Image 1 (spheres, rainbow, N blue to C red):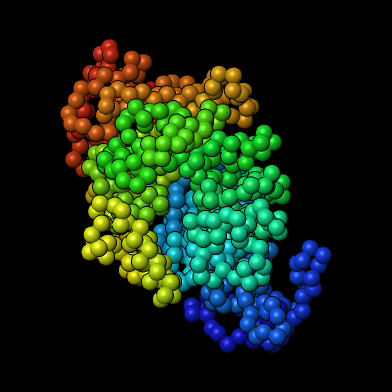
Image 2: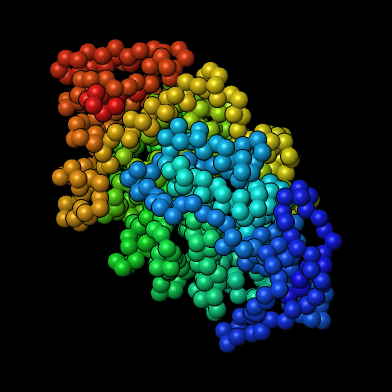
Length: 620
């Protein structure tokens, strides 16, 4: 190990480091093949690299570095994780029943783009009413800007966001005001520049499995036990050294593992056994596999929840008519949307429209809260050529109705930063790689869209924003000044009211016949009955969801998602009291109130798409 003696300087002066006399410290190899040693004279802040051969002057940063103050190619820094003074000893994270996720990208969430600046926005998020902050990956990456999925120093918070204690301060402050903090982690690949794990061992990647990013991670071949432990230690690192409450596991379908115990099962079981607090795991996985969400002791992978994208896809196809790419698998009818709401995902074993092959499994053993749904997230916005958000594509009245459907559906909702005020800024794909890799990324990004009708022409593809351009990143920052202006202020009030209304509802709990008993800890059990997900199509443009408030009273959402003026008959058991509409004058800048005939049955007159909630006044 080579320590100290470097002449570089921090660009910002924000990161303390220690200069020591240049020198080589020897490590010793143990029986398992690990090299290690303990040094008492290298304090926190010491900079170091590893030299793998004394005959070679080339040295590498630590693959498990806690911080890379000069970037992923520079020296690693010794960090004292125990020196931070936590104040969250009594903290308990909310259950999935009470979770509303707010996904954010640290670099574009605030003008400053840092952990410390994000702390200043916690009071705003508290007023909004969300309960969990989901941070896009922060593992350090090459360059000064990135989505985070090119991470290579996976134990080190990206230095452009702040020092390790800045992230700890963010988590501590979030806990103090009542937020769980989830971190997006990437274990299916390492980024294309600065990943030095292979210099230390040839066994990190698989010769048998590939991934969309190249060779697959070695989870089931020779020496895979050490590779699996590397990633499991990373998960434990975020949970123990940063008090992270939950991990969002990126693209778990790309974690190919043919061993008897799947890596995900080992990961969840080991972290839960060694962590000193409950840890929640959420997977991103398009396969709709119920086994992933079953407990390890019943042969599952022990994942708590999954991004259930079928909901988003049905909504987008219905609202926009898009049918290219994976949207071709979805009809977008309200009958299909109702099925998705009842089941949690749409594909439950039937053939895919695109491939003709069966997709998905039966979700009937799962709870409703295990399905995380959205109408926007970083992928569904940022992977569009122009980074446009859903509200940039559809009528505001439709957007308000879809927002009501999302926040009052029984599944666990996720918001993507800025959607709660219909932010005008796009969220584009951005990188900051070296020139040659950057050129390849730009060409590859534009080439991805060649199969889409709008970009078959080369000139149109050339107009797709360059991921490498600094302006692409700058355009993606939220513009907080617009929050108080119309129409953004009305949309923001819409989201505040919908979230407040959601908190009055009892968690929905599905009980398939003979499938399982309600656990004592289930929130629904306190009502002495099982609540079910109930979605009903009223006509080809209108859907209803029945819920129950926390004192047992019925609440019915009726959402007209498309179509022109129409009379709609409410479900026969709908209450007569109006609790909320998306045409209320505090949420719509040009309200077109709905006419309501409270006879039997109740009839509603919609002049355009919108949503209404019927229930008891006690629900507010």
